[in-house]
Amino acid sequence: MSALLRLDGLEAGYGDMTAIRGVSLEVRQGEIVALIGSNGAGKTTTLRAICGLLPLRRGTVELDGRRISGLRSAAVVAGGIAHVPEGRQLFPTMTVLENLELGARSTESRRRRGETLERVFALFPLLAERRGQLAGTLSGGEQQMTAIGRALMARPRLLMLDEPSLGLAPVTVSSIFANLAAINRDGVTILLVEQNVLRALRLSHRAYVLENGTIALEGASQRLLVDEGIKRAYFGR
Amino acid sequence: MDPTLVLQGVLSGLLFGGVYSLMAVGLTLIFGVMRVVNFAHGDMMVWGMYLALLLSTRAGLDPYLAFVACAAALFALGLAVQRGLVDRIVDAPHEMQILLMLGVALVLENLALVAFGPEPARVRSALSTATVWLGPVFVDVARLVTFAVAVVLTLALYLFLFRTDVGRTVRAAADNTYGALVIGTDVRRVYAVAFGVGAACVGAAGALVSPILPFQPATGLSLSVASFNIVIIGGMGSLLGAFIGGLLVSVAESLGAVFLKPSLKELFSFSLLIVILLFRPAGLFGKRL
Image 1 (cartoon, rainbow over the protein chains, first blue to last red):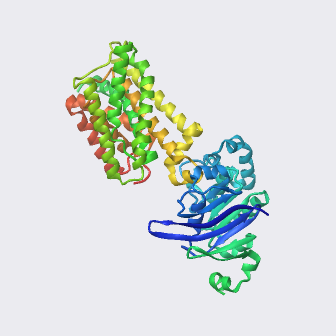
Image 2 (image 1 turned 90 degrees about the vertical axis):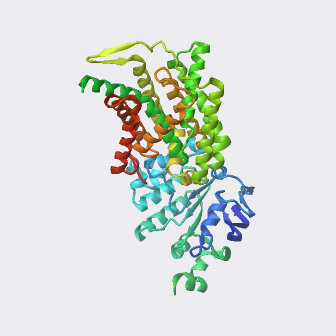
Image 3 (image 1 turned 90 degrees about the horizontal axis):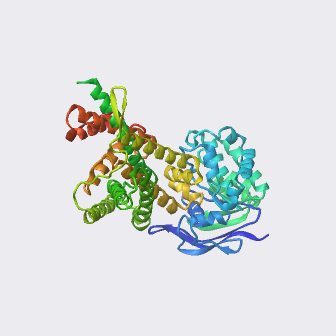
């Protein structure tokens, strides 16, 4: 399998603070890769650096062998990476339908907007019911679905999600993770950032553990699930 | 007090209010999207008026036709100001933004002074002298047309923002700039469109009001202040608020002129501001403070 996304020696930060240092990882075509770690480990920073929302100090990002580091976020999205950010970042005074349709920005995704919308509604039937409702009035789970749907409207090859389980009831998280598995079966590669380590490892094929801004551990998720260090650090056993 | 006189005041205030609404809608659009207060708003409007004057005296074009050209010219000016100046300070602290925009206002006002002199000017229109009677009150045809065109333009702006893809993108950026960036919006381009459209509104408003309101380069400041008053009354960033606020302020000023005297009309509009802020600190349609 070839690498769809390859990070090589990424360094980025805020002001004098360096949040990630020498982060290298790859996501292969068709995979679900989890990026796990505790609060402040640099997970969100890594995602923001990939999609051009935060300038890189060092390192390169390649999508399908083509260098995308240094591009602005608009160009990264057009290149095939969609980002579901932490806190969802919807447009609260606009309707669900408007939020979804805004996700289709590139010429190609706009041309096929109706078709993609049907796929999103098939995946999240609830959004079809709520299409006229203002996004700010949705429940947390519905907002997360809208944010994922909006990202899918860009017809991405790689979907990146930042803490999709944050603040949601366990039953809602289960249904959203089932949706992610379905999206992956449809051919979308996924890079998932999560603090909910157990769920992330169960869903993903491979995982990277980020600690203090560097990759501390990587491997098949099945193996990490039984790793003694992971168990101690994240499952409290 | 003669009730006919009051009715007359309300009606002429209401008709003049269309222009106030259009002007305030432009300001609130710029603020809503960029969180930058355009202190040069009134001076941009004065340039719309002088352009209408030039087109009338040099090309014999009636201001009720020339407003299209004035809107286009101000769109270009707004685009240039955004790309050349405002873009650099969008993320800067408010006091720096205010200094820059006040600077732009001073430059525009003094350029008008150099180009046209300090004397009051007025644009002639074929409609200027026509009036019609509506029952007991009479109506300036010029005011009626000004009102109608201003309302149609505000409606067109509404359709642009709510029914077109570019307009929806502008609203999205106003709603959540970071969210717009995340989904791959070229936010700089959205800012340029918003500033251009906001300036075009005020350019059209200037041309439409030029046959009714005598103006001079110094008029800009009072128009800016009136715009701020309306936008704050309506709720910062609210289009509907700016529209309703424009009509309210204009009627208040018109009644002020009826009950007291014309030079005290602003006593009414600013009292209105104080009263509304006492009860609704975020303005009539403001959502947050």
